[in-house]
Image 1 (cartoon, rainbow, N blue to C red):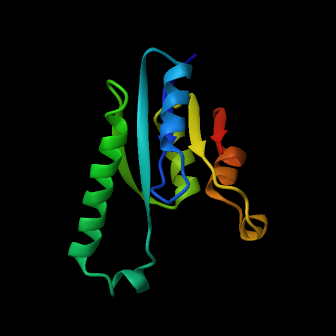
Image 2 (tube, rainbow, N blue to C red; image 1 turned 180 degrees about the vertical axis):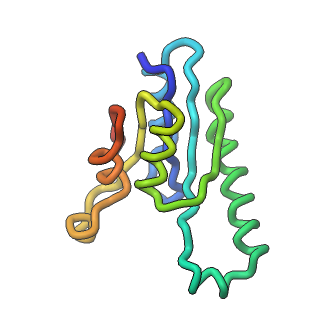
Length: 135
């Protein structure tokens, strides 16, 4: 049983948030902290200059609404939106906040994943705690 579970959430089609939620409920100790986290990818400064500030804030606000809706599925869970690069931010945030399990959904691997890697694969290789991958 785990006391501090992190569930990274991508709102891409094909990600099984419901299954991750179900697994978290089964593996959580009574009173466990469960955090749903969505990463908004950092944008290079040379690109950021061309994005209207209100567009970026609007995108983050929408992501916060969606992640809060995910967290409502589990009593006491919370939802966070964090800026960064997906894999690194997930592992760094999990380590900094004492996570003892990461539950992450993954898509079916494609050719590009072999060369570039997926976020789930990066998390599996670099996390300081166990990682449960859902496909």
